[in-house]
Amino acid sequence: QVQLVESGGGLVQPGGSLRLSCAASGSIFSRNTMTWYRQAPGKQRELVAGITSGGNTNYASSVKGRFTISRDNAKNTVYLQMNSLKPEDTAVYYCRLGNGYWGQGTQVTVSS
Image (cartoon, rainbow, N blue to C red; front, top):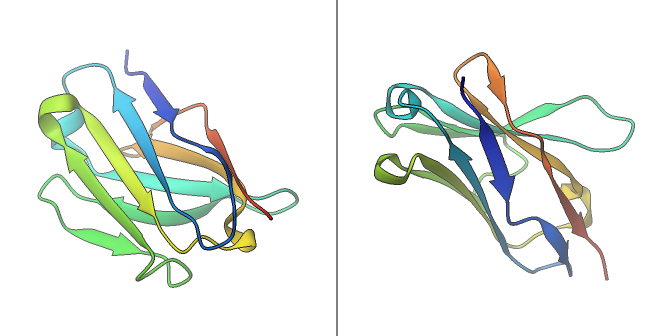
């Protein structure tokens, strides 16, 4: 059974930064693509960033240049460094392992 636990969300002012973490249990982390999604109130869940087992990354156009995804396979953890945050980044952020497992989400609120 794989469990994903996100942390690092919170309230930040526009222009600020946050780093999200997602820790995975089990032994399959290093072999899987990890992705971050987000869902704002009244909107569909959308892909934010992904990183393959080999370290290749991709980003939504709305966050490219501001967000950075990384992973530490020794710690079974994926990170999302979010800089220059905007109010429209406000959402619940979820991590996903492969195509099946989701975390419980962490709230990010960008507001003055």
